[in-house]
Length: 180
Image 1 (cartoon, rainbow, N blue to C red):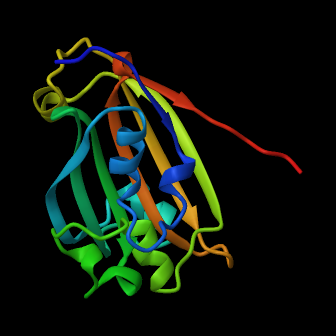
Image 2: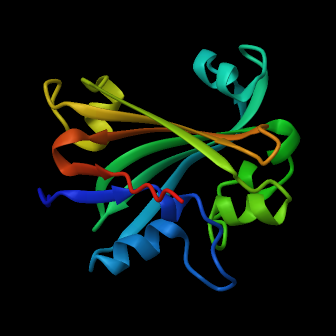
């Protein structure tokens, strides 16, 4: 397994792709001379976990749509990502299915009239649970980063919550902020 560090910036994952472009992860990895892919482990409606319910503004346990993915870098586990959507936005759309979405979910959301306007990311560090250890090939003492991203529409409606878990020793998070 490669031990090289992955530098991750959020912006490519927040912007809809142009017609015919690959999803942001595949394009980002290719730009760095790497191969990015993903395996959709599950997609469909689930009861909203507490934190997700709070962020999406729904009742705890209310149905939401989730896409659970294992993100691979050069065919090695790099990240676990669960992306949640309100059912009013995602039910009956490709977001609720396991097929790859051309251009990625952010592009589809924009096509459906749900473009993101404000994003808030919270990052914490901790130790992996047993499932994370097994899936990401970690020990119980290997730290992980947990990134929770809330995307709001132009009218401040929550449209997406991402919960990511990534091995800390293989990641570098970069934030670029342009003012003015």
